Length: 323
Image 1: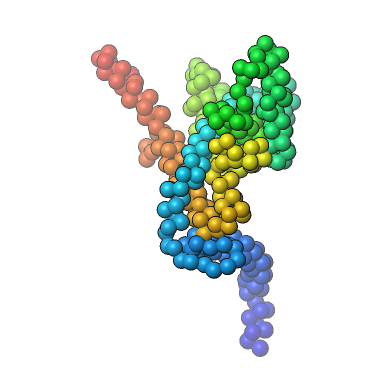
Image 2: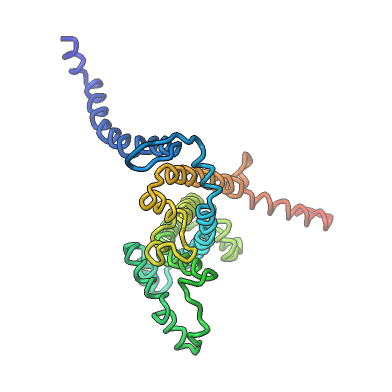
């Protein structure tokens, strides 16, 4: 009877409905996210295959991550994709700034840049595999410009250029995604800020640096996190185009090879944990940098504003007068 009275209370009914609707997604989240994650950490402490005997090795797998030449080299290859991610963000921000102010043919240009992001990554890999193959599209284009094919490198075999080529495919694919996110943020900036800047005689650079950048810093941080984590975990271009040969095996390709071909599940799990820690460290570093340069201090001034004030004071002191 008391239980029936408890259920008749409207507040208690709301609690029951809320818990019931939360139970299913929380259960799925635990089963398919947190449970596998903690199992992965546990596996990283063992020398094991998918099936068979497991030998506890402690942190030896983590030591191997930083001492095995193939794994350490794959971490170094991430620098190519990291450099490409900054080029990608710079281009995306440049195009987004231009296209946010209604230039002629802007919508067509937006669609052209965004289209590669809609294409499947495996398909893009096959496209560029033939694009860079000796004697195919890229070589044909360059020879029509008068460049001898004999003087051209093997784009996918030459270790001096192949990783740059693979990183360029990622720039081509994800440029549109970053650009669209930037455009959405820039369009949300209050137009009155631009009008006030025009009255004060601000240049386009001043508008960009002092109005656009502080207003879209959240999206900039988001794009940085997505781009840098994507550069560390690059997989599709090198896997489909070169299968990791000719020194193009990225961290994910080596992890996939160890886990699925060599059955070194414990070592592959340790690599995944290390990758997660790297991503966390990079994310925290990015947030720290943006907090220093873009967030206002207790007086409401950003880093750039404080620097500009110090510069004006220094000029005034040198002239012996007031600003």
